Amino acid sequence: MAVLSGAAVPLLLLGVLGGVGAVLKPHVLLQAEFYQRSEGPDKAWAQFGFHFDADELFHVELDAAQTVWRLPEFGRFASFEAQGALQNMAVGKQNLEVMIGNSNRSQQDFVTPELALFPAEAVSLEEPNVLICYADKFWPPVATMEWRRNGAVVSEGVYDSVYYGRPDLLFRKFSYLPFVPQRGDVYSCAVRHWGAEGPVQRMWGPEVPEPPSESSATLWCAVGLAVGIAGIAAGTALILRAVRRNAANRQPGLL
Image (cartoon, rainbow, N blue to C red; front, side):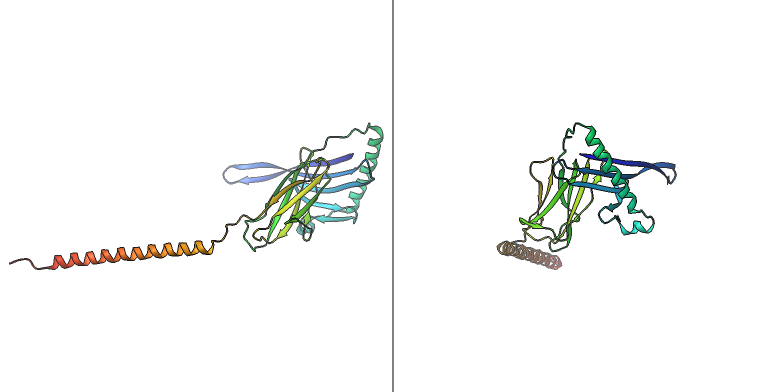
């Protein structure tokens, strides 16, 4: 069971379009937090953070009591005391226990994540890139994501984002894997979630054209050489014909 809370603060920022006039553009600053625990083993999950227009500004590492900014530059212009998030989590935990005690403890339906797997940049062999695994539209926010390369588990360099809330109260999450594309490699990303009996998985491999074989290269070379020779012969014949025509035109007429 879980308890979720948050506050959305609409902000109106003034933008000016040349020759049109002033236009009001709405923005939303969202404080999102949740506290949940499973019915079986006494295991709990919690998260606290701020989002601006669905992009993360920061989240709080609750175990370390530390504010983590999505980009370091954000921390130069603002600050947030992690202790405030810990206090909110304590209140959330207490509220959850009260709600569990007052309810019939019926279970809400789980929503299985949708999964997508794609590279961050256009793929070139031997050029460093990043694979992005995107889990979307799932509930509750408890999901583990696993990477494999050619069937072997990969964990080095992997970075997982926090859970991002959606307006429909579902969640989304990203996982990033730096890699160097190699011909023939196959990568997979799998997410395990309570709403699915087994892992939801997507696979990806670099789609690059195969290099021409030696026989194909020889064939094309021969074709190119033949076309070149034919072109030279045709050009020579045209030149000779033109020379003969000019010579005939220059012959003196009969007296």
